[in-house]
Amino acid sequence: MTARLARLQTHTQQRSASTTQERLHALTLQRIRQATAAVPPPPLQPTPAIACAPDTPVETLWAIARSHPELRRWIVANPNADADLLEYISQQGGPHVRRSLDILLASLA
View 1: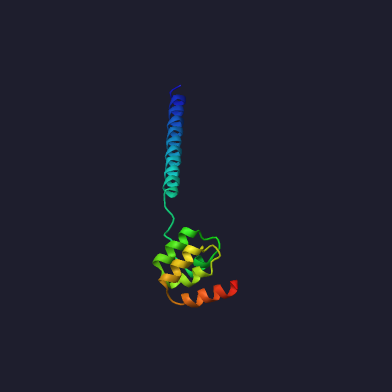
View 2: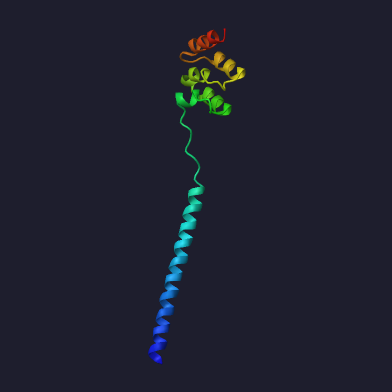
């Protein structure tokens, strides 16, 4: 009877150890998922492609126009650029802005 009891205790200890390992593994995976979900997206790196992409939000276009004068000419080509934004770009200027605005206005005539 003692040998059977010893085997039962050994089996119970092994099962308890594997259950503990499984719990620790599940907690670790949960923490990794939570940490990954909390990571913010990387900051936007403005490019000509973003400045003239039709799916770029107007708020982003304004941010680009304010802080990246070299990309203003590309915003002029964006169909989402509204009149206020184009007026701002026209007043602020930048490399090739005048030419881009001339092309836009000529295409509307």
